[in-house]
Length: 470
Image (tube, rainbow, N blue to C red; front, side):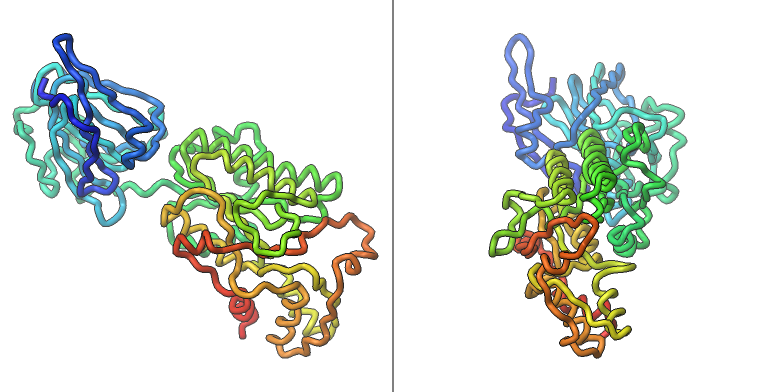
């Protein structure tokens, strides 16, 4: 064999993003040789994505000059040679600035290459009896969408060591299109679940114009359906953003509400967590300050232990625990959400205009969070490839009580803020006849972890003024 014995395991980048070549240690003696063809722990430490292979294929080639490709499949590949030697050629067929980039090299048993989804893969055998092997992270499916490029494409201008006229090539490969006629492969799809809610609408605005982002309401995708695992070809997706939740905190304290809250916030989240884990997806899940009891006198950090007071908070904490088991996850913890439709700010503005002098709770302190900030923060985490985990995401600036927010609304709309009377939570709900959920008294979340990734939210006071048009 032509492989070199005794190499150190090492990795070399190429001009195609994500396409990397590995030198593999091969140990030999008079009996033959041995190598670790793929070793998850060692190769991940060198930067190889933990791509989760599910299938191992071998292509045996009798003669020199056997030429296959150029095929771009919707999965990642780990390509190596068991016996013999090949000349490999790879062409980036993905949407983006690197579309059409070409990389070529030789592979023998001491070299391997990681081929990301959407990069066209081809090779030509340089020795007889060559065994070409590859691991892939999806099972073959007739529903999978491929892209192809002609081996003789003039733009790519691959310098095949054996002229194509003298090579063994299939009829199908000879008929593939030139680069100018290739449809670029789009990125893996993003699915927004809960697309009709306040946050879902903000996410639609944030990702407007991106064809690879899809949106699903409960009508489109029932997370509690028994066939959820087969509802879509999940391997075509890269990210699921879960913007769906049962957020009626007081209703959750009733028997029917409790069942609905657990179904949406736990059972549905369990299904998404299972799907994301099984298919190697990133799961983005929106959490709440209600997972805390509000008893500490400092901003809550991401690693503070949860201690929910009511049913809603308990279901959100349970959902967070499920999502935390997904290898690729972002739990985005927020508070006091303001978005499209009816919300506290619009209610206060309407009361001010109608001459109503409201009584507003003054012993709950936190920060307003506008859905535009949440949507932008989620996009930032995904696109910046921030470390997975929990992130607090609220509006920035000085915390306020609900009564202070109401007074600011009155001021900004030209009304006398003294018309707002502050009351305690206990007094406000003293006459309530329906169940009332316990509220955390301090909901201030520490934003330093999110800010360390390069994202800063808008001061809540500025967003408030923008919403009111002043």
